[in-house]
Structures are given as structure tokens and as C-alpha cells.
Image 1 (cartoon, one colour):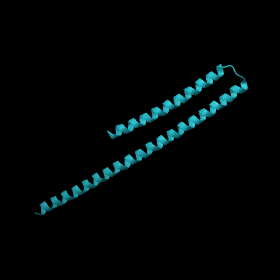
Image 2 (cartoon, rainbow, N blue to C red):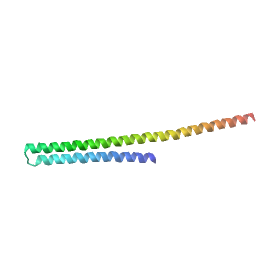
Image 3 (spheres, helix red, strand yellow):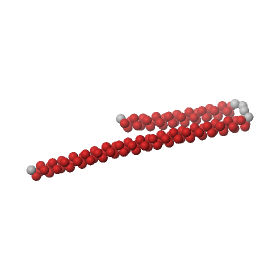
Image 4 (cartoon, one colour):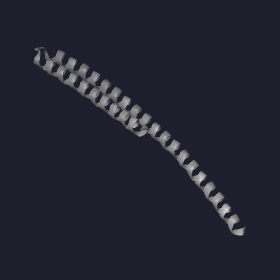
Length: 113
């Protein structure tokens, strides 16, 4: 059940990132279209387009930073998950060895008796 919860969280993170990128892209395309359709001087239009381009660049950088942070968190969770499972597996192997050793001793003592 833990594995399903983990993968559901990953899917939400990707969906939110994709939705955010789509939202920013749509907004920028809408703004660019509005600017091109509104009659203005060439200089004023170029200035507005530069501002929108800067905003778009900032938004893309923010989304990239969030995505990198999400990847880092997922990596850390995966590493922690593996470390926990490795500890459980090590304990199980050690318990099996102990049980086998005891059983051999028991069988050995029964043969001698």
C-alpha cells in the first residue's frame, strides 16, 4: 500500500507541473496575441513583448526550480525507501541464518543421542 501512495504522489507532482507550464504558456500566447491585434506603435509593442518575454523566462525558471526540487525530494524518498527495505531484508536474512544454525545444532545433538 505504501508503494501505491508514493506513486500517486509522483503523479500529482507531474500533473501540477504540467498544468502550471500549460497555464503559463497559454497566458503568454494570449498576451502575445492581444498585443499583436491591438494597434500600437512598433516601439511600444516591442517594449511590451520584451516585458512579457522576461516574465515568461522568470516563470519558466521558477517552474524548473520547482521541478528540480520535486526530483530531489523523490530521489531522497527513494533512497530512504531502499535503505529501510535493505534493513528489513538484512534482519530477515540474519534471522534465517540464526534459525538454520539452531536447527543444525538440534539435529546434530539428536543424532548423537
